[in-house]
Amino acid sequence: MKTMTCRELGGPCSMELQGKTADDIIKAQDRHLREAARSGDAAHQPAHEEMKGRWRRPIAAMGWYRDTRKAFAQLPEQ
Image (tube, one colour):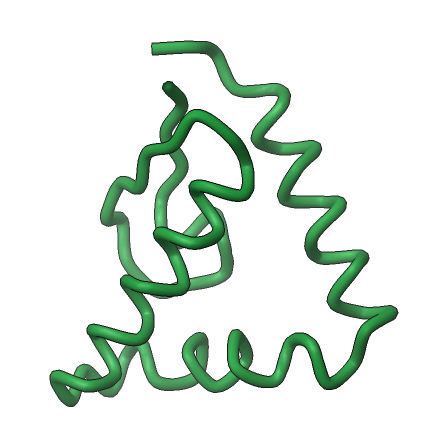
């Protein structure tokens, strides 16, 4: 299990997200941003919009995805 924060993934807060894989962490971040935006948290709105639009620009999205996977791989197991 590894941990990354919302901020490390491009969000505005220090909420810790955990997962066994980078994909687990990315899915947790997506859920976190979606829930925060639904609850009216203005600080998370830009990151939520970026997350929703990420796959409209596949080349840029793949760069973000690769960078996130690389950062995840370098984290210590907990």
